[in-house]
Length: 61
Ligand code: F3S
Image 1 (tube, rainbow, N blue to C red):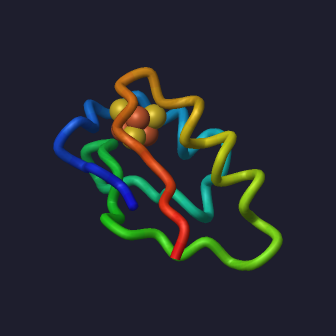
Image 2: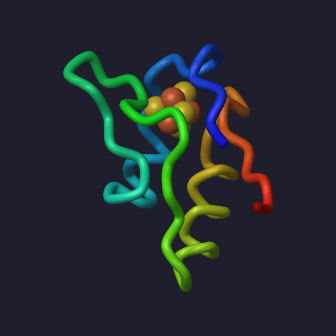
């Protein structure tokens, strides 16, 4: 799950896992509920941890 309301365009999530966290033309997160493929959880966790706004959180499904 991604709370895009807190995204202020730091793009660190994208730098960590570009395919999981694409950005829009303005540099903000372009996805609201990114699908994390099996085996990509660690990259997703690293991207979540990289956001200085704490805009991202992962939830188990
Ligand atoms: Fe936004 Fe945080 Fe990524 S501010 S672009 S969600 S690093």
